[in-house]
Image 1 (cartoon, rainbow, N blue to C red):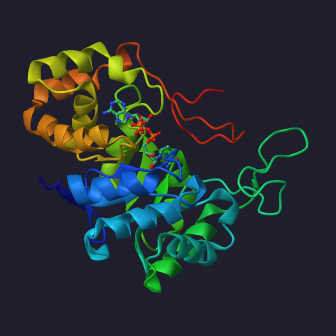
Image 2 (image 1 turned 90 degrees about the vertical axis):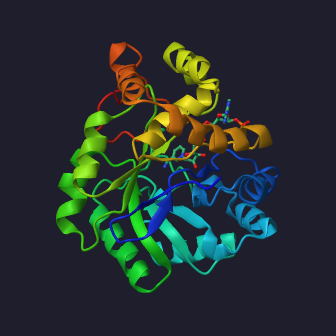
Length: 310
Ligand SMILES: NC(=O)c1ccc[n+]([C@@H]2O[C@H](COP(=O)([O-])OP(=O)(O)OC[C@H]3O[C@@H](n4cnc5c(N)ncnc54)[C@H](OP(=O)(O)O)[C@@H]3O)[C@@H](O)[C@H]2O)c1
């Protein structure tokens, strides 16, 4: 069973379902990726330098035996690397063992001090995150555009960017409009207005933590459970199929073979069954008292999102 693709604003095609790799341990992620690609049919892997497991992801891709050209690989620029984008790209390419990335994202619209007290999460003496507040993310973006021109990346995008950040800090200054914005999107945080804004600009929304991340209450949601029962599917299939039905690129993470398989096959089954009425019902769940974000790092910077804890 093949996963449908969607076209990015530069013509590059991206599969609507991708395997997430955050918190997939170095000792388990190679097997998870190999299984997903070789046995199930995934052709899209979502990676990041910050996940610390790109080498093993690359190993899993090679072990699958599927040609590199048939697999869509995303990586992300970490917050301490905004002043040396090309070197960061080269590091991810070397880690993954590939000559190009299909998509490269600015992980957060935040530049952390590269000379701070930690390479990943530097903090000031008072314990707050060491953010360089006068850095312009449009200067990061120019370096990302240069990497596309050099042929190291096929498409560039952002992650964790609100409409406010895009309109005030990025879109007026770009030569290449971001191809995607990867965001926390799921049943309890659907971000309807932002998704609509992105689509109006030709920016494809990507859903991270589509199941609500580790230990999620979404899997027990009663609306998802009722639809799962109706269609003889799992609640996870409904949660993921809901997003894919809306042309949102969806990135479920699992290192468990049975879940890797059902998150692909069950999701495609859900897409074929969910009606417009079902989608409307799911669209209304968060606003009816269930709104919740799960990923809210304490950056100490206003990112311009609705429902971000103060
Ligand atoms: N851009 C960003 O800032 C950002 C932030 C967060 C995430 N992401 C990306 O998005 C991906 C997905 O997000 P996520 O990892 O936070 O969370 P997620 O995919 O919503 O949930 C993953 C969790 O759900 C479990 N799970 C997976 N399939 C399941 C199923 N069918 N039934 C029950 N449980 C299931 C997994 O366990 P097992 O693995 O043990 O099966 C894991 O604990 C990440 O891996 C990463 O690639 C990006």
